[in-house]
Image (tube, rainbow, N blue to C red; front, side, top):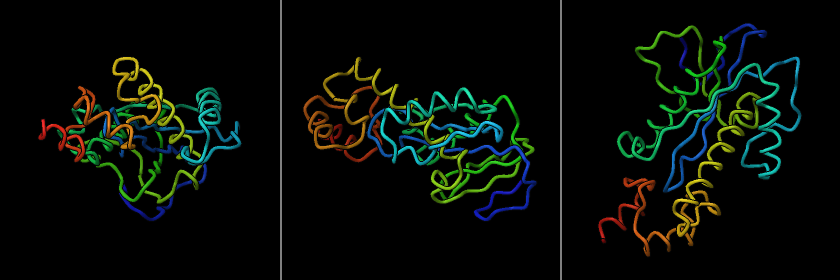
Length: 206
């Protein structure tokens, strides 16, 4: 198994899974990851980094990806796991869960960023590499970024119904001025990441 930031040799026709995450930076909610194996016979125009798409564009592409991909899987690590592990390890946990959820075993995996999740102790038959800005370079990674973002946004909308005073529907848990003000006023909710600085400061001050 290769854990490399360079491109290892693998057959051009190999089953390629793209992996990406959504939600590393927010102060609340889970971090999501998706793994996608696209079907070369059913191309999907318009796939790119999910952050460069509008919400309607992401939702439309997500529906098309779910319909046309050979297989896809979405997974998450919740706020408690993020606090217990740290955000990087929790992100990699979500990625491993997404890969484990694929109905088809990939032969090669490409992960957005500069680090691959550790698969130590796991028996796998695929190679893996990290690709910086892969969500704009590799369609399968871009597709994963879209699915992860759409799924996470939907969860944050649901959390807004439970905790409406934080404004999760608007900022999705990111540390906006409004979110920080609500955090100071209402304290931390059960879905806030207690090890993140602004949340920890509110807890310590309370």
